[in-house]
Length: 416
Image (cartoon, rainbow, N blue to C red; front, side, top):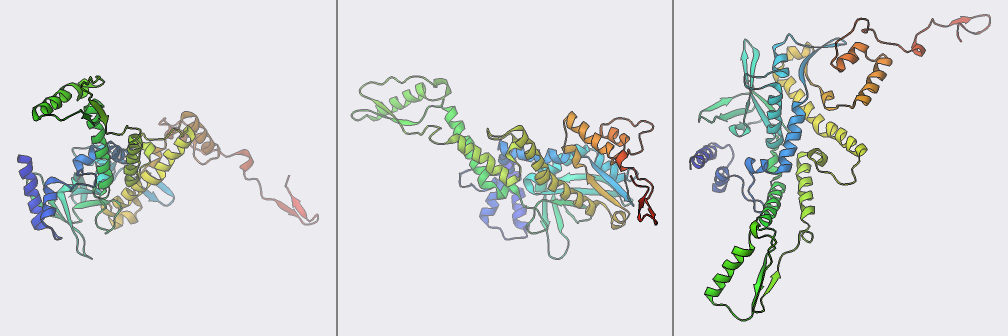
């Protein structure tokens, strides 16, 4: 009851203070969650997280973001080095606040972006330097925007306190957006696909709870009295319904016949429906099905490897780029950006190679002089060794003395 009253009070505040027009049906949705889908299921954050495919897709996005080391870099001419002296370096790479590690912070931010399309970070400063980065739950925040002014963020905290923040206080990371000031909310857009997944799951669960006994009707000769009908119904329920009675044979007399009215799972294409539901949710979240453990029998090692690369390019890559640019714009001043500072999510961390592939890769780069041997050791988390800081140069690429021209012979001299 307390939870209901809390939701009702919060909904009423939203209803009264909304920037757009609400009717009584909208208020009902705010209290009880989204209205029923075509499949008859209501989609809220709680129910969406219970759809295994949606949760798996959210984790793929969130953990993919969290596993990328996020560092503050500084470019000075042609030299790029980590900006370890800047306090923001430690906030991004180690711990953005007193509660979370960098991994936990990025993971939670990824979940907010995957499901709600928006991540809100409250930024505290000390002496104009960023001190703490705290994530706000998306459902706490209401964005008010009047073009062409900057957005205003109205935050309703769990303790009932309401505060108004500006873009100076809030780092707002937006997912794909239609209106430019808020991201598209996945749960609202994909509610029909999520509702269908819930309905299929519930339907199969109910069949299993009945011991996989298919529904039907019992036909008897003549008519039954009301008392006989009740007794027969109770006998069927006690002896042939539920998982405990699965597989029990039915003994009938007086020319009674059991007539099934249900299709088999094969006829109903249950497996096909479940596969389609997985693929549909993956389409909405832009995650390849193989990343959530869903693949067909034709997949090979080579094709799976290409799918993982495609995931890095078309799912993880855009999210990383979005976060980098958002952090550069919000966490760095124009003067800092002009000095060469920028944030970088190291996407190489996602492209883990086998030992053989990695050895061949590093050997080619060091042999061609693209990286030094100590840089190759650093890629393997090994300490540098003396004498390995100079790049190698292939013998056939060594520059020789410039050719001379013999004016008498009219040919090049000094060439082989």
